Amino acid sequence: MGLFDKFKSGLLKTHQRLTHEIKRILTRSPRLEAADLEELEAALIGADLGMEMTTRIVEAVRTAYESQGKAGLDIFGIAAREVRESLGKAGDGLRRQPGSTTVVSIVGVNGTGKTTTAAKLAYWVRNRGDTACLAACDTFRAAAIEQLKLWGQRLNVEVIAGAYGADPAAVAHDAVAAALARNTAYLFVDTAGRLHTKHNLMQELQKVHRVMARQLAGAPHEVLLVLDATTGMNALNQAREFHKAVPLTGLVVTKLDGTSKGGMVVAIQKELGIPIKFVGLGEQPDDLQPFDPQQFAEALFKD
Image (tube, rainbow, N blue to C red; front, side, top):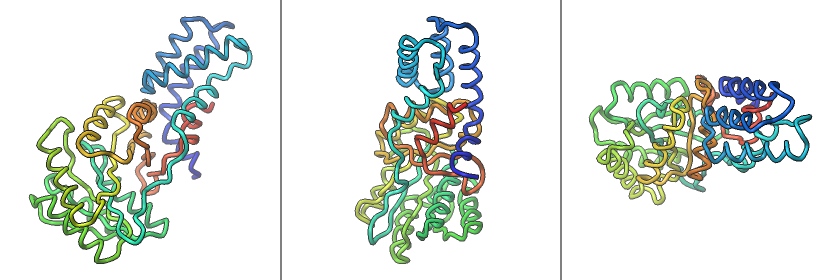
């Protein structure tokens, strides 16, 4: 399956909801009335595209209608163009520290898929010819270490772990030391899930990052927040609070294939300006894909 097909399949629920509503609005009358534009706005907000992006699309549609009429009015094309331009160019995936280990911290609230994301990122860099290892720094959640070790066995990636209840910062310290000793290209640090509203847990995460920075200058070089697409715009609050506590370098949006609110990707990137680096479009290791704005916009709107 090609990349566009993966995006199209993963965004199917959002795409179907949007295209159904837009077609209904388009075919109802030969004119495009104010009430139609209000319904278009409601459909776009319902897909969690956010108010700013929704307004931009509706105004572009209004302008096109006023200049050319409804005949040949391509709302899908206009919407895809506005989203694509808003999101900018495709990113270049993960940073790479030349001649040293690149440390990537995976953060987020409980249940977003951090452990799976860490493993899939290790798989992704391995497929690109780099070496990778995983650090099991979630020492609190039942079976978190076993889950990461199972992924490690499945993907043939080394997992550095401590005992349950161990200090996560100590595990992170040992993992950085081990990755450096082995000259590993990437170390993916699976941190414990934590509510963005819990100040003490955020302080613990900051400690993990400080300890890694003392072991290796600049670490962590990437801080990726994993967001569950099915939570819609609630993810925006999570992103805001995590970004205050530990400056984020990128977002990973998982479970896009399980929601009709895939537009939240656009809203979050638009408001916070944090690049979306990867999106999860399914369960398999290769279903985590680098984010491509053009493919995303076309999969969202292309009829």
